Image 1 (cartoon, rainbow, N blue to C red):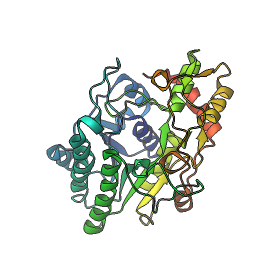
Image 2 (spheres, rainbow, N blue to C red):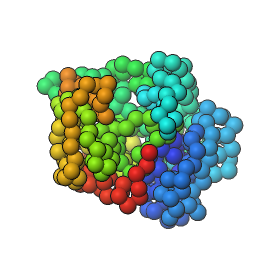
Image 3 (spheres, one colour):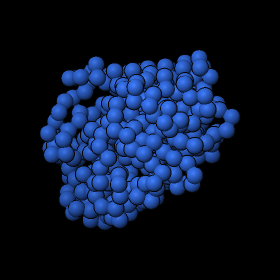
Image 4 (cartoon, rainbow, N blue to C red):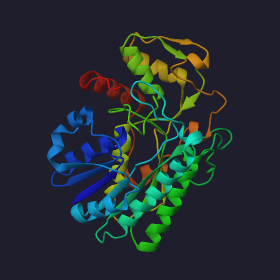
Length: 343
């Protein structure tokens, strides 16, 4: 049995690959990723390296996908490869481009037509048990129920950028492929993710608030922020991986086409920093102009994609639940101490 993970070199999916192989002793994982297999991945995957195949290539390459299908015959697919909202940079910090402003055609091509290419592979696999498409809370806008409450999967979809537009389009396309060609498909909308293996990648040029707070606190550096009142629903990468596993293992198909995957609890930046200070007592922060900040938040937005996500659908169907936020942050800090900081 083989699980194919596109975008599997990223920090969220690298956790899924490791956890899947540790849980499924006789199975194999194939990772397709546009980026290189770096030293961090070699160390992280060392316990399962003999059952993991890493292929560097593009999801737009139909011939490559066909070869993967013929040689490995995956029975499950987790499609996570994407071009994100954030501008890619080199590890030295040199900006390459702003995807939204400079290469919107690339965002749309990879996120929409790349999904189509992977779905084209899926429909040729007769034994395919499940196709999980990784979407994003970016399909929502900056507003939601009033007063701000948990953001449900149904309604409130109004993506304000090409990224969100492409992710919502991929949801609809994936759903229709499943109906048309008879395989189980669902999409998962993630809130803000942090955790083990979060590092620079061609598709990850963004340092999220939990990563910045804990890494700077461990280094004894003062964190510069613009405001304490901006909110976020922060989910640990291994909680996301466990959610993906619950869906990929689900018997009887998916009851819904879309699932939110989140902590289910929005906290202000000030609250997040206080939780991090419990872990790193030396943590200090100061208010600074936005241009000079390590973390920038917008205190105007309390709901929508920035607020609390409703995760009851996934919980009821699979029994999955995330770690409490305090425990999850401590787990991430422990990982950084034992594995080492990743740039």
